[in-house]
Length: 211
Ligand SMILES: Nc1ncnc2c1ncn2[C@@H]1O[C@H](COP(=O)(O)OP(=O)(O)O)[C@@H](O)[C@H]1O
Ligand SMILES: Nc1ccn([C@@H]2O[C@H](COP(=O)(O)O)[C@@H](O)[C@H]2O)c(=O)n1
Figure (spheres, rainbow, N blue to C red):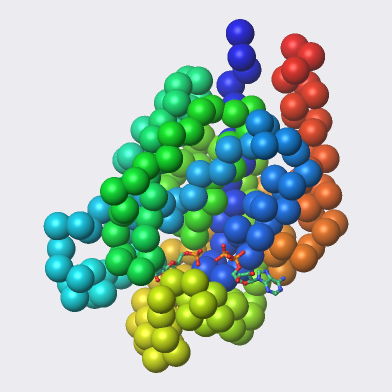
């Protein structure tokens, strides 16, 4: 019988380098080994709301996420069942009509700003990581990324940062650092931390495969 997948949570502020860390870890393993589940893909569906209203949503508050669906999907994957992962569109601020069918793999990396905020998610994790990057670097990275990739402009990024990203980070994201087993400063360029994570995953896989 297949072993229950190992669940690794990668949390941290927006622009901290969660995606970069996750990709660096994934590059160390074959495509068949690690499945990445992005909490962002589980933002609540807002297709019923007019676009103007979607602009007013606070995307950094825990209530913006459909964690019930996310938890349901993690449970299914842990039971070796496939799921249909939603696809999120940052330009329209809602789910797209597409879904991505995914099969369970030996390791699941669950990545997102608030994955350590919901105790139901924390309970499902075997290893908890917090990517810890200073706020000045995070806002610079976010500015570049959101303008290049998420259809935003300078004013909208600054406005959103001051009104929701920063206060929600201080209220909800930063306090979850205390739940982490490992804190990675500076994110994806931290090769020592990536090596340690990869070695830990290899050890778990070896143990699971020889059982
Ligand atoms: N160490 C780094 N140095 C420079 N740019 C980085 C670094 N880590 C991430 N970035 C860039 O910053 C942006 C946000 O990084 P990302 O990994 O997507 O963060 P998160 O998933 O936490 O929001 C991306 O455009 C990424 O390429
Ligand atoms: N429609 C949306 C949905 C989310 N965001 C922002 O995304 C950030 C989380 O993603 P990261 O890759 O940066 O971790 C979060 O801080 C939301 O503000 C958005 O701008 N629009």
